[in-house]
Length: 271
Image (cartoon, rainbow, N blue to C red; front, side, top):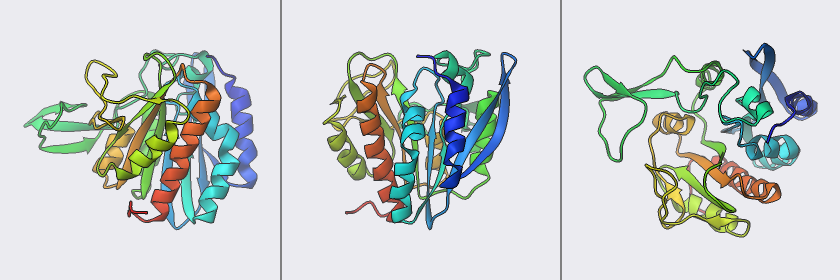
């Protein structure tokens, strides 16, 4: 669904009284210049939130825009700092299209794997070995901009990327995660009150969820980058675009608050 990015930007700038609102870059798509925003709230430990890589997945950017004040209060009470990139692909968001107006694919392109001497690839098959990984330098302008900004800072305590699935039918949710699954199971159990958790099912031609609705997949994305950077809690949350927006907000906020709690514990996932 197309969105009004000018109004979106106005609302994001309106949070300047509770957080630092910066334009980390500007991009031009179809002759229109779009500001790219980072909202920063200081704290003892950091959570990075990214959203809006795909323009036809509006729930994440809308949750962050509508509920940022509540999110900031929750984080401040737990002394967690936030770096929030609320809408990474503004022309796609405005047009309701997956890719940007130039037809480029802003998702992934954060790193590459050397799987054999001189052989580099962006995605690994399950359990595929590799020699090393490296930060990628190419990709669409939106990806280059956010990648450069994220890489300027030390690795956070936790990182959450908010997506949607525009292909699967019905109201449903699942997530890509790494490492200890216990904290993420709790998030999924809470999310199940708002949408069906996709368990033990294929979500695309490559990936299948486990019994908890979780997938582990090294795809060169921002989540994969945070894993390789040593971030103990990194996940990409998915709700289907068929899920009612209010349910998406509820699920997104469950995961956002959960990741604030994980960051507050300083890498300890226990309760």
